[in-house]
Length: 408
Image (cartoon, rainbow, N blue to C red; front, side):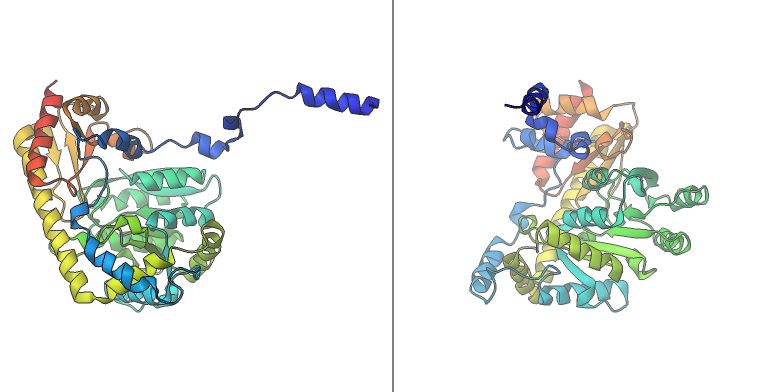
């Protein structure tokens, strides 16, 4: 062994041993786990009545219809093969027809990318639009999955409060005129998760005008649009400006397990997102896309199914809100959602919902405390309740258990 070899051996031997955990990236080490996902391990216990997870009602999913559809398309040419990154052309055409009807202007199939759930669209947008240190505007409270996705991009989040009519766009304008320059403003404008609110039409027009003036994009996450209890929903923000990337999903109206959503928007964003998707998963499941294309083509049957889901959720929403109001009286302010899957409640008596959750779990009921939806740990007096997957008689019991926890 030469002297050089000996020196090298000593240097190598002196290197400190590294555990596997030491090899994880900083961005994933700094990422906080979703409070909702962490709750799932607890709420899966049979004795827990869960108002926590944002789960559609499984009994309302058209399992037999989807099974028949799967059997029909399974042997179609290419059903089990790789496919194009942008998605199945027939499914993109159906989605484009829906988007055209909602916006009141033509949207072509080439303006649609099919994603592996709309959550993937958030990840792709982070990859193609965001650099470390960029500013992104979110609502307060905001969808926790978006907060996690944007945190991975190492950006600065500016949270704008919302009220019963959605984001306070007057406060957004103030921040913009004071110098805030976001890459995009992220909104869930229709039947918000978690707040249950719907952005008023004048505020939709306002944020569209601000996007045109200040040059940012709007990311319009419209996952709950089709869950309007009366069958109507406001015109999307994309009806008022072209500076919008819209996200949609089949998860809330058919089956989240299929993991199929979509993205529409400016051609430059879509082209970049397609390249990022190639590097991420090549394409969304061919079989799932063929199934949904076949199901969506049965327009009358789909309309009947969605109408049934709306009626089911409307009944449960009204039941939960009434139970909370009758049980807690003035101690709780709760919104009355016009669609979607969530009710947002604020305790007016100083209750901190984080310790309340621990007492509630001991009583056998779960919900998500407000801080989970905040960029700063705020909303400590608030909580999100998901009514979609709990029958009305069990909602009564859930509220009774919550009352015992609150009294304790």
